[in-house]
Amino acid sequence: ETKIIGECGVTLAAKLHCRMARSLLKLGKLDEALSSFNYAISFSESAIKRLEYEHENVSDSLQLLNRAVADATIGKGDVRRCKEVFDALQLKVINLYSLEEALAICPGLISVHEEKINLLAAAKRWSDVALYCEKMACDAVRLDGVFTADLHRYNPLFGIEKATHLKSNFFLEEGMCQDKK
Image (cartoon, rainbow, N blue to C red; front, top):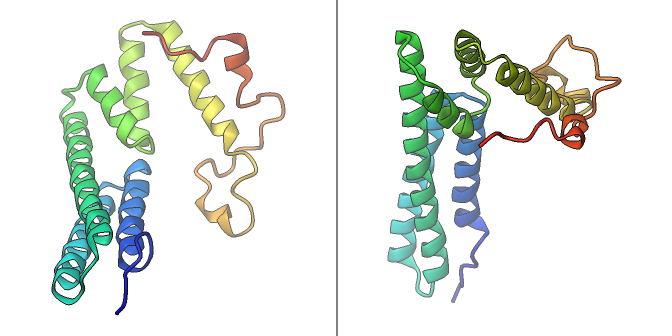
C-alpha cells in the first residue's frame, strides 16, 4: 500500500503553480498570471479526481489540493480586480483608492505607480508625492546587488547605478516612510 505524503508530489506541484501565478501577478503580468492560475486549478482538480479514484488515506493531500484550488480562485479574482483598474486607467476614470488596491495586489504595474503620482500631483499633494517617491526609492535600494550574473537580464532598474548614499531603511530611521492613515 502506497501512502501519499502531503507537501510533495502533486500537492507540491499544485502549490508551486499557485506561487508562480502569484509571482507573475505581483510583477504585473496579468495575462500570464491568469493563465497560470487556470492551470493550477485544472492541475489540482485533475489530481483530486485521480487521488479519489486510485488511493485511500489521502485526506491530507486532498485538503492541500483543495486549498490550491481555493488559492488559485482567489488569485483569479485579484487578476480581475487589477484588470478592472488597468481598464479604468485607459479610460482615465480612476481614483486613488482603486490605485492603492491594485498596487497592493500587483506592485509591479509601473503604469499604476505613475498614475498614482500623477493623481497626487494633480491634487497638489506635494508632500505625498515626495513621500511616495522616497518610498519607491527605498524599495529600489533593497534590490541593489540582487540582479547580478544570471539574474542581470531581469533587473527592473537596468542602467541605474547602485545607490551609494541611500540605504533601504534611510527614511524609516527618520520616520519619513511611515504610511499616513
